[in-house]
Amino acid sequence: MAVEDHKSDKTLWRYRAPAQMDQVQLAMWTELLEKRTGISLAKNRKSFLLTSLSTRMRELGYCCYDEYFQYLIDGRRGAVEWEILVDRLTVHESRFYRDERALSLLQEKFLPEQCLQTATKEQDTLNVWSLGCATGEEAYSLAMLIDDFMLKNNVNRYYSITASDISSASLSTAREGVYHINRLKNVPLNLLNLFFTRTDKSHYRINDRLRKRVCFARLNILHLSRAKLGMMDLIYCQNVLIYFKRRYRQMILEHLVKHLRPGGLLVLGAGEISAWKHNDMQPVNYPGTLAFKRINRDTQA
Ligand SMILES: C[S@@+](CC[C@H](N)C(=O)[O-])C[C@H]1O[C@@H](n2cnc3c(N)ncnc32)[C@H](O)[C@@H]1O
Image 1 (cartoon, rainbow, N blue to C red):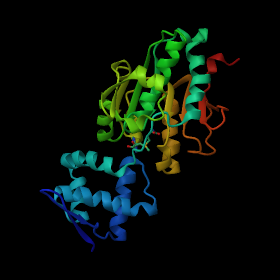
Image 2 (image 1 turned 120 degrees about the vertical axis):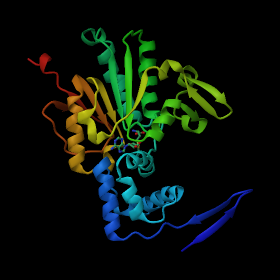
Image 3 (image 1 turned 45 degrees about the vertical axis):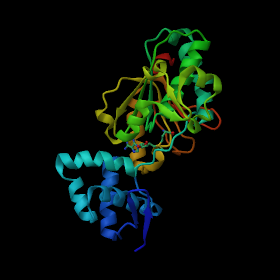
Image 4 (image 1 turned 30 degrees about the vertical axis):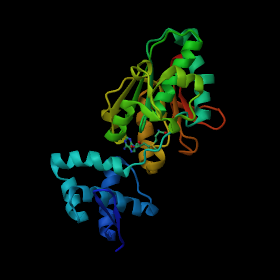
């Protein structure tokens, strides 16, 4: 077993390769992850699983996978521990203005329809949901886009963004809304000046104007039927479904449709699902995007 010692000033850091895991143990862990989150662990991700588990086990003083497994499935204390572990076992990569095509679909089609057409512009709050929002970049990008559009077009409609994720740690970062300058490269300069305040040499903080509009909440995508959320005008779910098996994806999409107002838009990541059809949803033809509009039966002749 490879053991490396790294000496710092006072502490002795010792790297230990994760212990071996047999096939039965591997099956138990992947099943637990899939049952609780819907995420299916690809075969080539075994080393990621072992490293994440052993790091956490070391922090707690466990050296055996089975003992830690028992701890995790043990009532209340197991539930608290699961919240921490799930953060280590999920991928939280995100970027501001990540999907240019999807955002231009919102800017060119969705927002003009929602905010400038007489039938919709007088409506109540424009409700948006960013699902699997990780550390908040996606939700704040949507807020900037909407706020900027409304400012430029003199629109008075109130908007509100609900942003949810399974990872409590990611949600704390999102709520804090402080980002390193390197993470803000995609934010247009005028919006950076408008919506952020520099806090030190290398960090910027989202201004209250946007923070007030975004509400972060912990929600497991597998428990959407229990979600106490109103009807949405826009559901934005990108780079999340790719981690789920097909049958979970279908189930999740069914629930999302139920949360969408007639005329509302569902935006997924391009190529994330194929051949999905729903009687109430119409594919939106906008190059480089994967989006569906909920059919408004009231306006159909
Ligand atoms: C790769 S990030 C995507 C972030 C953002 N949507 C984007 O595209 O930049 C995937 C997110 O999905 C979340 N996630 C994974 N499984 C989930 C589940 N069962 N319920 C809710 N969120 C989940 C992860 O915690 C992670 O933050």
